[in-house]
Length: 208
Image 1 (tube, rainbow, N blue to C red):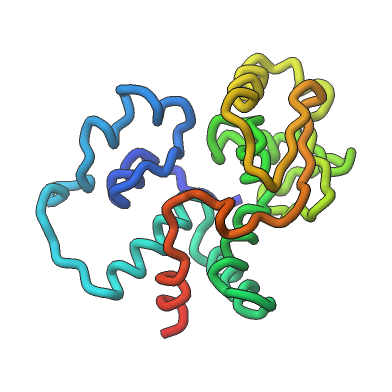
Image 2 (image 1 turned 60 degrees about the vertical axis):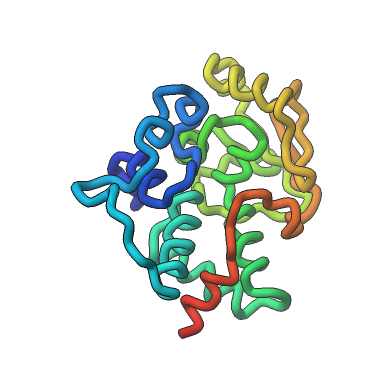
């Protein structure tokens, strides 16, 4: 499984936005973005004028990094969204939100999407009582995503679930914390995806 193995805090600094790639660390004083809120590298402090293409590219890179998706897979998601009925940008975000690793993260079973991806690939997650080890698997409305029985004793996961109880989950998901499972009630509406994303810029980029 291809993935980014570099320093993820540099990604947040490059995009000029917290992407919450390191879980709890992103909320602490040790967060690299809080300490050095400028782009990484020798020329990170310089002010540069960004043209339209650069703005569109940065938006696409931001969303890719936020969801932990590489270029080829992201392009495939866009092509699928463009073929589907409805608004292309909204279709793209719905597809990304439906990824199993994202749903595990949204339900609060993991503190970050990278941790959620690891839980899935190591066999800790079930969909409708069947073990699934593919982080990019897309869930459907009505699907029940749950932790395997043995995994529910993991202390780190318990802490994440307790945090999710207080934080809450998106309206399109329903969490049963006592049973360590969640239900996908419906596809997420655009106004339920609260992250600062301008998907129209991505559509414009790929439409050239």
